[in-house]
Image (cartoon, rainbow, N blue to C red; front, side, top):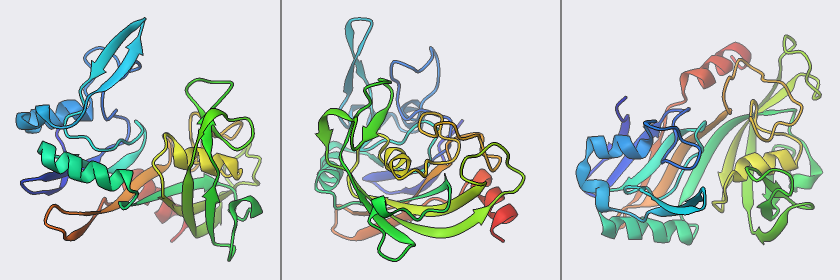
Length: 262
């Protein structure tokens, strides 16, 4: 597998990440399993010393995970735009933008149900802001929870969203939302782990086919993976210019759109 590159210059590499591949190794990656970090080094070995490694504990030992140039991450099953720095100066420059929440990220997702929930502070019935802290789940160490029941310490988390379309699938059986779905854009203002997934679960509209947060919902719309795509990212270049990079919708998304929305 080779990297699909959306943009590159002397400082920055923007990758179109496919679903199903981890950004970097962790305690769950298999031996000899390729990650995006590996593919980055296959593409440009000079990025090896860029960035900051992540330390994890595995079987009682601390292990340092290489994250060459990686400024942020996407979940394994999430597809789309991933930003990589090619030198340390640019890494720190981009990292500061993430810390200051000045980078604008747009995600596309299919969620269960027709989104219209007062808990999301809906102003018009189509747009909303979910401003609810996130903490660890008290039940499953892999999961996070918003609102009551979240285990401290809680972290501020804000997600804006817009409903693009609402539709139904009468062929899907066993759903508890009357076979209804929404196609949304999500705008995370903070960068918490699983943030969009947790917040959509909080307002009772989990992301379609989410293996952790969909509850008793069935896999739907032919989506065999988490129906979440990192659609675009807007950031400041080292020269001060504002840059927006978009990732084309993947084939599984376009198939759903063609079948249900056109």
